[in-house]
Amino acid sequence: MKDNFRHQGKRQHLVEILRDKGITDEKVLAAINKIPRHLFMDSSFEDHAYQDKAFPIAANQTISQPYTVAFQTQLLEVKKGDKILEIGTGSGYQTAVLCELGAQVYSIERQQELYKKTKLFLNKIGYRPKYLTFGDGYKGLPLYKPFDKSIVTAGAPYVPNPLLAQLKVGGRLVIPVGTESQVMTLFVRKSAKEFEKKEFGEFRFVPLLEDKN
Image (tube, rainbow, N blue to C red; front, side, top):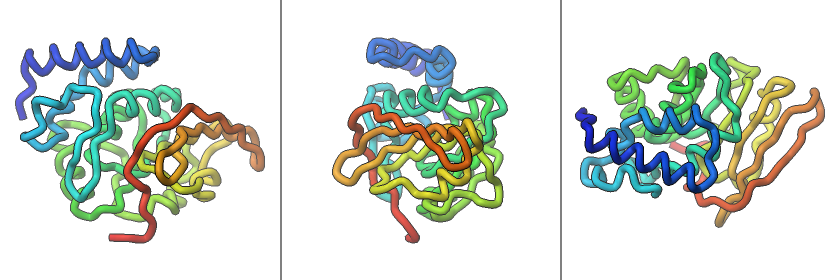
């Protein structure tokens, strides 16, 4: 579990790349500068950990490209103490970024193997989400609603209604929508019935799978 000066130097370089690509939220950049991304990856990929690329992890999933993580997090406008629902725990990297920003994170992972591995790993490196569970992200977490913010880290063919329903008024949902490639979409809840929708260009994600183990 080493994090040395070489890793830290590479992280600083990554932050500059993200800045050049248009990430302006200094708190998000500081979180990425602090979190040892190489620890979230298979050791054979360690040398590539601070490139702005996605990489394979367990259960045929990927750790998202740092730019994508930063972009989604920036759209969320995270404030300290925000109650955030994360769909797709994955490697736990996005979870760690949200924890680093002071959010209370409620996260769902639908791959049992990944869920068990990530739960242990996050604890080991000192990131403690409020609640981590194995389950179907399409359903959200009705027991813990409402949420200030929600983030989906896999490509959703459509926007699951429960995720919109579980948002507070004023709350934000950031979700990549589409099948082959996805359009990054932000929903802001304006009232009980009304949502404002904005789109932010194309991204590529692994699919958000429903009702599977």
